[in-house]
Length: 226
Image (cartoon, rainbow, N blue to C red):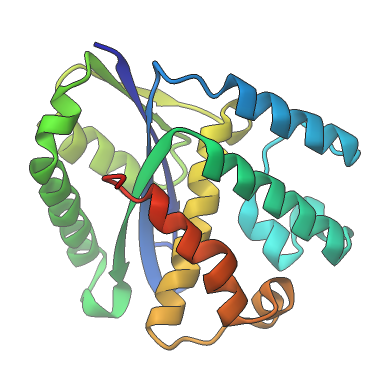
């Protein structure tokens, strides 16, 4: 039996600064190599004059923030699409837990809701996880809530779990989880009638293009893969 890698990223916070709280988990059977996909992405980023060893953070690319604040729109779109192509071609699947925070009276209710949803997902798919010799969880310990859920709920359901604290630049699949979480947040906003921000509208051009080019494509990666 092979090992299963689970790469985790989140969007939102336990305070009042976000409408939703999302946790995305990317699943990778480590017997399936992604070396060729990584090599291609590294080469394409090098051709664009970017430091290919750095992390590609999707949110700042869309919002023109941090290291992307002085990068023009065309180049940011190209980098985003290169990363999206990498995600699409990798032998992975993913799922996203999503909670609209106004449905939770406080952070404890939010934690309970996410714990219930994670537990239900693991119970429903226990046979899949038991088909691996071990499970390696990769997370950057960005938020205490997610670290807590990993160490309690996930480790309670799965045996032979190795939890590793990482930095996103170490693993492309951590960056894949970041991109998928970013796009799933866009899906939640769209399905709940929340308008796109100015930066999102500039970057994706329209909700229709966002759905057609990106969100519909991701259906093929949703766990379990069809």
